[in-house]
Length: 252
Length: 252
DNA sequence: GTGCCGCCCTGATCCAGATCAAGTCACCGA
DNA sequence: TCGGTGACTTGATCTGGATCAGGGCGGCAC
Image (cartoon, rainbow over all chains, first blue to last red; front, side):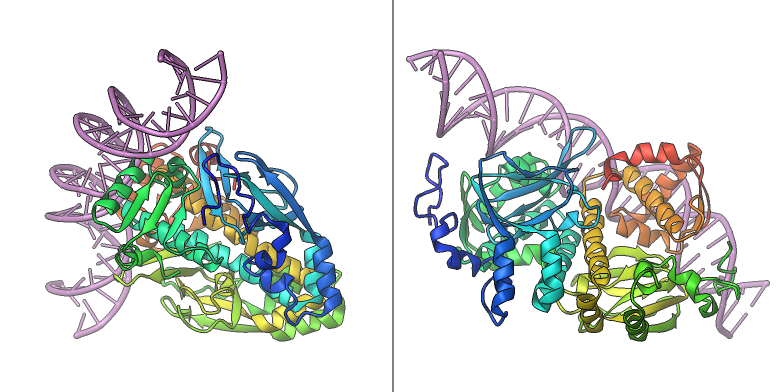
């Protein structure tokens, strides 16, 4: 893999950011079954491709959208990792989630009709922008599109719910690592080795832990030879054991 | 109000359970803007009313649906309060939420295509059952229905997210009480006096606290004259102060 | 009536994880 | 080469809320 060189720049051959390899990316995107010609009639597909807009690159720290902005579109991450977060009025950040290539961002903005959080690039990020108005119009014509949207929304409820549970630091950490692994695997990446693009502090915040606790738990997992860590590079060595630790918050 | 007499039975005049006062109920339901004739063409409305099925009563402790059952319908609570929860394999319950009259249950089941949790009546419960397949078909014909569903789903993501935050016992409790008050108010009930239908243990579990902590926090709120508590009857005395305590998790 | 049971409250103790305080290390710009 | 800075780690201490233990009370069966 080695998608990102040691200067943080994307390698030229990066399959994700490379628009020349569009089909390969779309096939792994959360919206792929919709965007790709899979039984959908051609004119409708044409409409979908017209309403998709490729945006990027965003550099590390750049905002894809900001809290409070009027809702107009949802986004699929094409390349890089996006963090969503809110800043409360005491100035403390709360990390809501990390969005990997192929995953959607902005679904939580439909109801309030404005983005309820910030979306920030954690490295070099490319996205597909879907105008939501156009998308819903299309959804009335193509039941598959509608169904896909319902499912994506429903799935996000489940994710948020799992995180809300009452669990120990080790349970949370194990579940987080396995979840990342599964999501990378679902997009065609390695399920055992990947890079934690986000800083420890963001992981900690997301899991409602202190960053010191994250360090310590990772250390313990290393000592028990469940994982191997080198900076932000991570390898899962004993996924069964991790699953066992995380069993109470994995099922959903 | 006094909707429930001291034997736990519904009073005869209960406006919610009374099918004779259907319009009044529908006007306060989360789906009301859809079910009621508000610009929607008549034949479509007819279809909607056909697909709605009134179910109940469920007695305290009865299941509306169980985890693992194949997903087929979403429900609007007509009367009573519904608790959703999961039991992990260690046998510990986790309360996901409470659903008041007019609110929807089951939206989180669309993606896994089976109910990911149990829905249990906390008192005498009546529901409207919406076949999801029929509803989505209708949604392709009536954009308002589709839009409503998108919004309901998106709103649930927001709710689950808020709960996932890292907050103190007092913040959680204050936010919980204000949230209940706002939801009762939105359905036409008093915003300052209502009944906590659920036992303390369920509140505690939902807020990821011990029931002892719930007791103590309520006690402290009483001492500070923010609320008045008599068993399960509750009155909010100083909502501004409560809002101040809960400010970090209310905005969303 | 009496005993039982479910729910709630209160006090004492304990502990997981937060916070505080120092480091180390890699990177970078002058 | 030398600070400076930001991300990460490690150890010491503190604390909010869990857990444990006990008791009160109202409803209900007998």
